[in-house]
Image (cartoon, rainbow, N blue to C red; front, top):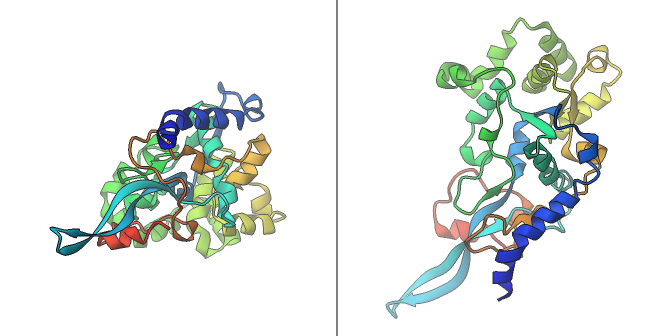
Length: 289
């Protein structure tokens, strides 16, 4: 009975609580001129807040003779709401930020090179692909600020991981090379993303690459960094600036759900599972604790 009430009422309650978390933020933003934000790939990864997992119910005898594993598939939150993981502080601001995007208070963008970067990984890394998964933001909801990525995506000689950096290095874009010199050779793609956001008038690059954010902060007096018109910012920093109230994604467990939900569980280590399908059901059973 209690579970049926959760399916019936929790989606509405979750939406109302999410709206309450935006009360201070909405007056600061103008839907007629939404704030432009370039979305890093790691944001899409962490936007998947629930995954599909096999929940074991033990063994039973099939035909009265043969022991078999029994269980069921269910939606399971990635994070326990009591987790101490530092990244969870940023993840709690993602529901509100994405909601502001969907109400046109913010305008989220991707870019050609971000799309190419994402194509080099399994789809499951940046999207909800299994039956009961839940994501706040799907990659196909983001347009590219700098044109269509298809020419690069279809040319495998240009889109492979070992081709992307040499291709960027061959660019004659002076601003990009200035940023690489300051941020270092390990941040070539991030330098390109910052350059892309700046050229297209996007004031923010939303990322959970903490090393990049620290690197930029440490060099804030550098002429190149100080002249940037795009700020690399984390979800928690942007959410705090806008006045968002942190929102635990576990509250969304029953949203659009018509199948088993185990909101009382979380994934091992409070992190998303591997981006490939487990080889057997036992691997899935080990995925929920």
